[in-house]
Structures are given as structure tokens and as C-alpha cells.
Image (cartoon, rainbow, N blue to C red):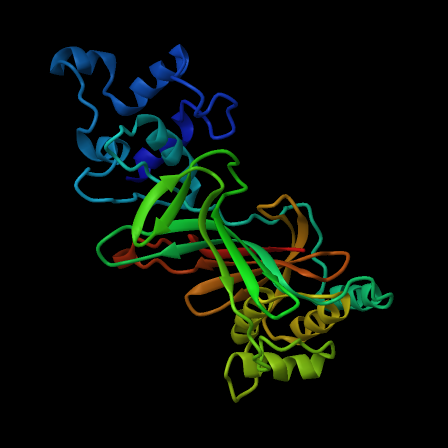
Length: 345
């Protein structure tokens, strides 16, 4: 399988950034290279007769799933995911479900200089001095999450969620299937347990919820003092002991899925993160929304967490989890993205 993946990487007839991708049939050169990729050499074909796609392990991969059951093929190393996806989308027939790749892990720029979290917290304090941005309940987030089971390969679900609260404490939630990496291309949806490709921007749900008067975290406004925010997040996570770094990152996700922070709350959260053990600076990354951020990595049991923060304001831009060990029974490889969130203002 390793040889076949290397072959895919080197011989992908239509790279993912090709302007013609998805707009029509393969060109002559691309078709020739694809035949070389999936078929035996010319002299071998003359000996064996006509080559039938689908013979052998690579052919089974490109042919796609059996039509009797939805089966999404993604138990591959993420370095080959784009090539496999491109070929699967081109070759899949109307009765098959194309293979869908997960996001690649974010890559730190090799020439970038890591910025200590303490320095970022100081910048957040400076940005909070003028109080230019206030706290707002609601969120706007792009997220990717992996669904795993023992009898099917993992699938990833890219969605965008917008939550807005009204003056009477009611709120609306809009969830659409969209992937900013490939605007305009089909997006995987998992509605009612039915995994299928839908148009980019397909509305998964649009709901209005009645007023909520809960005063418990995370529904109540978060404080803008670091120590009080620590206690707030602890209560929001229903934890009686001091938050570990892993628990703090989980609580950060919960907080940002509920609130759009003002500059003072951003500064308080940045100070908490700067005081956490095990978050090490690694350099600059560009996230999936094209934003430049400073990355901080926490190595937990079984997973790596990457926190992405705005280098000027200290605001949290994103949080990515990748597997550090393989779990073959779930089709999960080391380095595979498990989930990712990108928060917007």
C-alpha cells in the first residue's frame, strides 16, 4: 500500500489546485497519465488483454464503495488524501459515493520564530486597554469533526455554524455544510445518519430556540479577570479540581462556541493559557481561513492539540486535534486530524 500511495502522490493527473478540476473531462495528457497510474504497462496489457479498472487493491480504492451501502474511504495517511480524493471524485459513477478526505494537519512555517505565550498575553492586555471590542453572546465557527465506528472507515463533516442571540434571550442557530478549503465543491453531510455529498452552502438546520434564563456558565457572561475566569470555566466543565491543560483547552472550545469575546475577556483567557503547563510555542501557521496565527502545541495522551492565536491581539483563532498514535480498528492513523474549529468575529 505504501508504494501505491507514493505512486498517487507522484502521478496524480489532476492536482487539487488545477483550475480545471471538476469542470469537465480529463485532458489527453491527464487521461494518459491516469491510465498509466491505474493500469499495467502497455506490454503487460497486450499480454493480458483489456485492463479492467477495479482489479487489485488500488483499483478497488479508486472504484469506490459498493452501491449497496454507503462507505466513505478515508483510512489513508493525510499526505495522500488530496490525490485520492481528486481521483475518486473523477472516477466515481452515479451509483457510488466518492471518497472524502479529511483536512490535512496545519503546518508550521519553517522560517517563523515562535512567540512565547507570555508575550502574547502582554499584547492582549495592551489591546484591551482601549476596550474597543465588547463581549457578545453568540458565535460564528467553522468546524471539522471525525466520526468513527468499528465497521466503517472514518468520515469528516465540515460545517459552519452561526448562533445569534436576541434581546428577549431567544436565539437562532444556522448550520450549513461548507468547506473553505474548496469553495464551490460538494461537501459531505451527515443528516439523519445518511452520509452523502451535498452542494456547498447546503443548509443542514435552521432553528429558533425560546428564551433561556440560565445564569450558570457558560450561559452567564464570562468575567474579564483571569482568576475569576478560571473558576468560571471550571464550573462550566463541572470540574471540582483545578483545570489541567487538556481541560482548559476543552473549556476554551466550550467558551468560544457560546460567546464572542471582547478584548478584556480575550486578555483574561490569554493569561490563563500563558500560565498553563505544557503549551509550547512552535511558530507561525496559516489556518484554513487564510489567517496568520501563532501556534502552541500541547502533547496529550493519544492526541496533539494545536492552539492558534492572533499574534497581535492574543485572541484564539482555532484549535486542532490530531492523533499521535494509530487506532487501526477505527481506521485512524497517527497524524490524522480528529477535529478542528476556527472561530470568527
